[in-house]
Amino acid sequence: MLLAVTGLVAVLVAGGCSAGDSDSRPGSAAEAPAGGGADQRDQAAPGEAGAGAPDLRIDQRSIIYTGTMQVQVDDVERAARDAIAAVDAAGGFVGGDQRRSESADARAELELRVPAAKFTAVVDELAKLGRQQRREVHTQDVTEETVDLDARITSQRARVESARRLLNRATSTSELVNLENELGRREADLASLEAKKRRLADLTALSTITVTFVGKDASTEAEPTEIGFLVGLRGGWDVFVASVTVLLTVLGALLPWLVAVGVPVVLLVRVLRRRRRTPPAGPMPMPPLAPPAGPPGGPTAPPQVPATRSAP
Image (cartoon, rainbow, N blue to C red; front, side):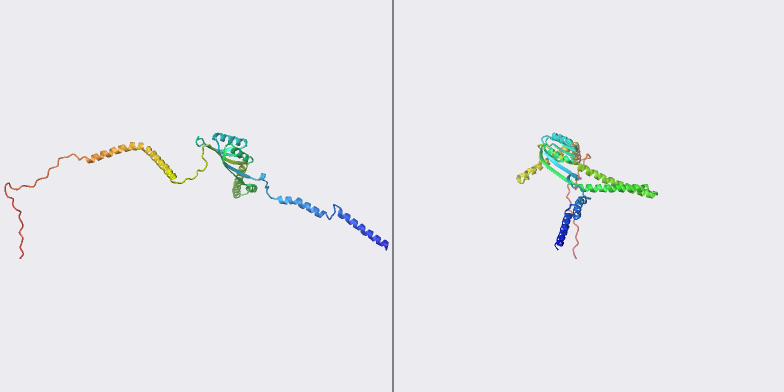
């Protein structure tokens, strides 16, 4: 009995030790499915998440930078030359140049195109040429539009190649004409898409800065609005003086014409009036005839009164 019990305990202990050893091994079958599945999920997750998604990093986005600024300087011409030199050093160029050289109100407006990566540095450098009065910077993100254009261009190129293959296999004149027209439309659409892509690429690669340099005597601040009797009187007097000035200017312009045309007309009118007042020359008028006189020295016969008939 004692030997049987001892043998049974020995068998149970040996079975427990072998089971513990098998569970504690690192390459055991119990750990393999769990560990292997987790590793596979971790490796597959980045690929699944990035499939078809655009790159959203800031250095990969298509952004159009546009800036406008006004700087007051002592010498407008010198500031314009310095601005052009700064743009040339940054790898850009001048897209437009308008200047007004009057000493009282000198002004220069430049349209500068600079690489997008140097946009902020060039703007800051331009502001240091004088006293900055205004600065406006606008950005437009066209990444999605650029991606859409790339996809449409790829699809349109495939359509063009398909039309060309069909054109090569045309067997009749009508089919050849139809395929040529269709190929022409597809090529025109492709050219339009490529032109849009080039335009976007130009705007994103080269930013636009419109800078205006004004002289130190230029007044750019808004004057306060004044009201009152004196203000109205001064405004009315200014309007009156301006009106008289305009009237005198017009009169001075018309005076030579009035002298050249008006004097002969006045002389002609006077001559006509004198002719109307002067009577025409002719025979003397005869005096009126006197009534006949009675017999000399005799009494004048009374007038005869007609007889009246009396009533019965």
